[in-house]
Image (cartoon, rainbow, N blue to C red):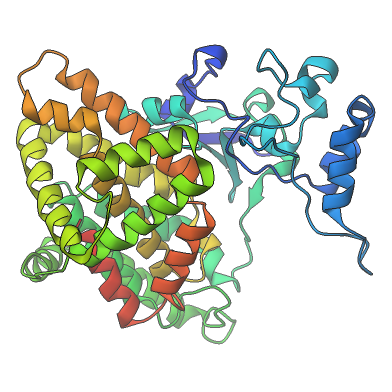
Amino acid sequence: MPTELTLPRYMTRFRCIAERCEDTCCAGLKIPVSPSDARRMQPALAAHPAQAEHLRRSAGPESDEGTGQTPFLPMHPDGTCAFLDAQRMCALQRGHGEDALPDVCATFPRVVTARDDHWELSGSLACPEVVRLSLLAEDAMRPESLPFSSALIPRPEAVRNLSLDPAEGYTFHAESVRAALLRLLDREEHPLATRLALMGQLAYAVDDFYFRGTDAFGEETRTRAEARLSEALQRFDDPEAREAVHREFSGLALPGGPCVGLFTSVVKARMAARGGRVREWGRNVLESLGLEEGGPGDLDAAWNLYTRRWQALNAARGPRLAQYFHHYVAHFLWRTSFTEFPSLLAYVFRLALRVGLVRLTLMGHPKVVALLQEPSSPETPEALELAVVETVQTVAKHVEQSPEFLSLTEGLAGTGRGAETLGKVLVFASF
């Protein structure tokens, strides 16, 4: 076990608010059941034969290696967990204690990563309380170091591990690469769009040798590869280098309408698949932006409307808006390791895509529209916070892990490497 736990400050404040939460983590999420989960749940499942049979059937026959496909907890047609009882409490936990829960249920919304000599704890934005705590407080993303405590890590055996083998350079150098991305994020003399472009340029600079499966860090070539990586990570510490990227990026005239069309197609697919809160949220956003029908002309008009709203909101609430999106990007850098992606450039592309989607849908939120109509209203700060929390949480829980969004990402990013992917980073960073 490690001796130290590193976490953003908001996670030191996190407490589940249970029945006071506007959503439930027992709906809208797919919960995998690992073999160890299944063994742990076996005694409790005796009281739930229908659900036990569902898990048995969904696991499929065992392969020659002794495992079948990963089953998921059974869900009702409305997307709620089949173990959610009439009091909207977990029947497994109520009847058999927390030990009967799958790892995901026991740890959510916590996400733990095992690094070199410490573990890191962050939270999932699919939880509304995590969104509030991580985005709304000025100091929310400030790193904290605490003595390791098993009370904060319910299932230590379920943590993600990063390789410490120097030959696996992609994961071995992950901390120093992420530190460089965080330094770029903190260069607040530049707009967020420029900082995303800088991250893309950094990723492109190492794209030919720093990626998943690279052999550049073998014994014979490791010294040269590490020197190249170090040089690239430090390049944009130079103010002149950053300013050059800012000038070039600011001069680009990038099309917005086609990107609006891509995001709109994903939102409509989620509305059809989910219904309920997601359908209402999506309908409000699309109608507000004039996209309920969705023709080519509507897309350019929606882009222009989005741009005008963003500029007006930034003029009225610029510092708060900047904080929310700074924290949103910082959360991604903490919560999602780029080693889960085939390349650093693919990771930055996903980040830019997410920021663009959240910004577009936020500008379609009814509370933002009302706020812009009455910018001096005393309810304005609270209204903006409510709109930000609902938008970010809805996108995190229902959109960005959906088949439609993942398919869009893979289709746009391709291999996730090369100049074409960099170009797409710049397009979506322009949002």
